[in-house]
Amino acid sequence: QLLTCMDDLNSLTMTTQILVIGATNRPDSLDPALRRAGRFDREICLGIPDEAARLRILRTLCRKLVLPEDFDYQQLARLTPGYVGADLMALCREAAMAAVNRVLLKAREPLQEQAQNCTPGLTGSGEQMVADMNHHQQGELWTLVNLLKTTETLSEPELVSLSILMSDFQEALTHVQPSAKREGFATIPDVTWENVGALQEIREELTMAILGPVRSPQHFKALGLTAPSGVLLAGPPGCGKTLLAKAVANESGLNFISVKGPELLNMYVGESERAVRQVFQRGRNSAPCVIFFDEIDALCPRRSGHDSGASVRVVNQLLTEMDGLEGRQQVFIMAATNRPDIIDPAVLRPGRLDKTLYVGLPGPADRLSILLTITKGGSKPRLEPDVSLEDIAFDERCNCFSGADLTALVREASVNTLRAYLKTSHNGATHPIGSTADVRVGKQNFEEAFKKIRPSVSKKDQLMYEQLRESLSR
Image 1: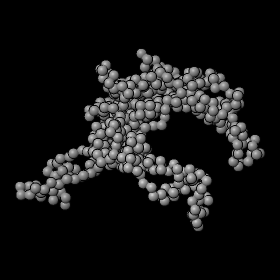
Image 2: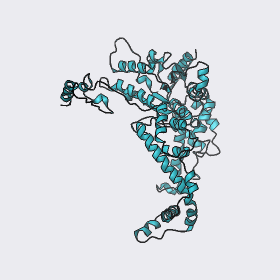
Image 3: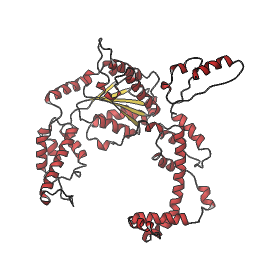
Image 4: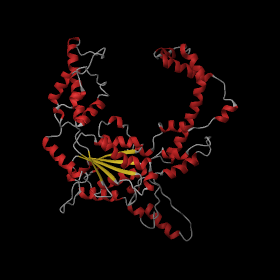
């Protein structure tokens, strides 16, 4: 019926002036007949605003708000990647509420002093509810009741000086989540360099490849340098490749989209390619952003002349997106694999994943650094005096251990400690332990753990990875 009515409008254009406007957030779900010429023949895409657009939106939304004269709109626009107009409106509203709460907190200070040794006079069920609260909650309730009872208003000078500060917007950012993030969008990971043991050389390379262009773009531009199109982290499993990618994104304040290679593959024709396009579109919408492809060898296997399946179409789509035909400024690509030899060579050429970094098995000194990071310097779990992390790191039994293996070793030693403690406490009773101050991991617990934990990389695989490292260093 809609198609028929729209076709009838074409015959009435000479006598009537009617314009049909439609809106949707799922254009691919529309009947193709609606999108042909003569019907909805003009399509305007309203994407997620970039930093410049967010700056203009914020200036418009804040026209009626009281802000300091030196308020930095540019910084606020930089802090809101992925926010659309409705999100920014909610952010301004939340910031205004934060400013009101900040003013009320000043009014609460004298009331809190009165609440230290008092509780509100309530009766019945209210009295029982107060009795169930702890002292801090009772004080908060007393302060709130007094605040509601007070009739004092802000003075004229206080009202004149009242304004919404940048700190109020920063507080509001923790409460207002952008619509894009609710759809599985990018987030800033909580992994820092402190969570990464060793790998100092790799850190420096990543700092220059990703952190440098973000922090000092003017220096790169002055020297005529461009950021690497992509970085591939290759090496044995469990050596911290994913951890490195998260730490880089956190250190630079970039959004982070993590993609597992196999999860993009779909049995239906065209669905895998659409998933790849969506990932890159999300990255562009939340720029600056790091798109991290884990296990990229599953996504980009080496093509041959006889292949014509879904994997070939996915590789072709990924190559098209990496070439940046639509431009991907401030979108950095990182990938990780433990089988770089089976990745299609076209993915590794300059302009795509043009920088390959080898993340190998740690040496004795690196193992010590990793153990110190895992155990928080020997404080968690607590260690007996006879335990030397240096001796464990330099032990020959750790020669092929990765970071994940060392984590498993410490965990197994801790489990052995707990098992022994439970056996000796209360004659094997299973009721909760009262004090854990005397639970410490000893040398014998690590010896027992060594009997169970084996390196995840065999000698044969280690030789293969050594050859890979030599080929990358040429």
